Image (cartoon, rainbow, N blue to C red):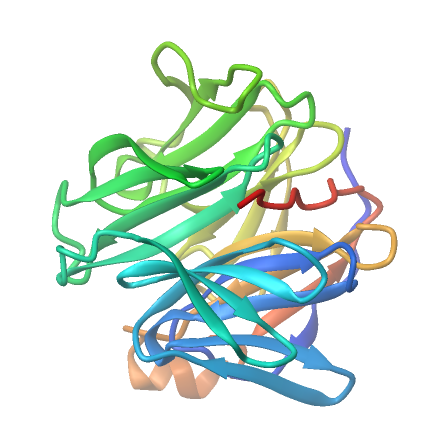
Length: 291
């Protein structure tokens, strides 16, 4: 099965150093995302860019209710009131590891919030994968370098994630309470190709849409890990997709301009922008986090 896709449009012209954490808020019908390196949560209200500034890196988001987001910062999970800008620390997140920061994340069907961490210098094996659920933050896996692709199957029984340098997306069986069981298994092996999986999201048919760092594309794979199609974008460092819009059929994609050579940035002005692509796929409504 393949989907019809339109031409990429610019959702927001802000050139993020490292755009990440795309989240379509199902109650507000509004896209939120992060620019990790400028320590900002971003959104739009019509023609107006909205920005919530933090004192440390922010990378990934989940929604709690209509006015509150749970934000992964360099040292904690923070509850952000997007209307009053009030902040509340929910729990520490590697506060004792100042050389690490959060990277990818997504809420799971049981109301938990999965978050990956990584070294600021991309050091090997210093990152971890965590799950926050009803007041408990538990480390699920250590020894990771750049955790990404956190998303969940619509039947609620599978989580996906990757350690990007391995070029393998893993799957992990979930119990009724959302905690993983047994050991993760390799679901997609991209070794020997030029593709490095970054953020990902599952649609309502169970297909996985994978942003692929350095390739300027999002690739859609079936539940059996078969490549169905690709969506090409005018930014080489695609980072995180989300399916949103009124009918959850718009593919939003963040990107990054950090590390690109100046001539490349100058020749293509899409690097770092956030894009919207019309499709006839249908996403899942993003799950809410239960604090």
